[in-house]
Length: 283
Image (cartoon, rainbow, N blue to C red; front, top):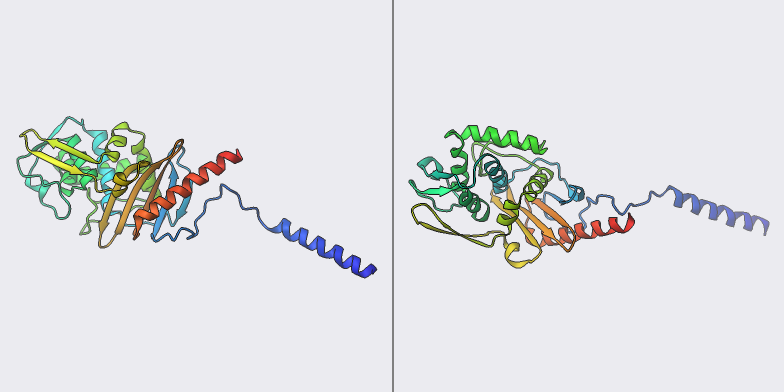
């Protein structure tokens, strides 16, 4: 009986010691496991209030951004140009493949309208028009893009063109850097308006009408979508940035090289909001 009691006490002590050795899982601990069927090669959810990471999966891995590049192009254009400035379209600006807003040589169009065409329709011609406007030399604008990304804290990014197309020049960035870029844009009312715009009608200086429809599907289907940017090339795969809001908070989701990214963004945003709520309850 005595030995049985001692054995029982030892068992209780061992169980208690094991419990002490197991690390506590903090509610605010960043989750980087594939619990959401995360089909992306790289992803992140960022709190737009304080840039806190709510979820990440290889978020610091350098990847090809495809047309997500255009968010930086638009940001640089906004910072260095007046929105009412106009651009006279030249051949170099439209000599590009892929998605376009169908500018023609001799068109005269404002910087504001070019940014709308860039972010809503992903116009590669709009990207080149904004880039060539700076000095007439494309490389000068590329230098400006890289200086700007350094100021924003996009430490693991490098840009060689303003549109993100595959080719001789390539851009590299990370999901984290792109989330930081979107966060910077979100602080500017103009970009809040552009990202959420569903359709936009542009009448240029020669009364040529251009109609833009936002390619971001969630802008049209979800009321709480803040908008963002789509991207795709064969090398980069599908890339996507989306901002979301609920009653009190805003988050941004970035995925790189992902399929079924629309549903994934909805799931990741919901997880992000749940993390914010749990942190508030703990504070």
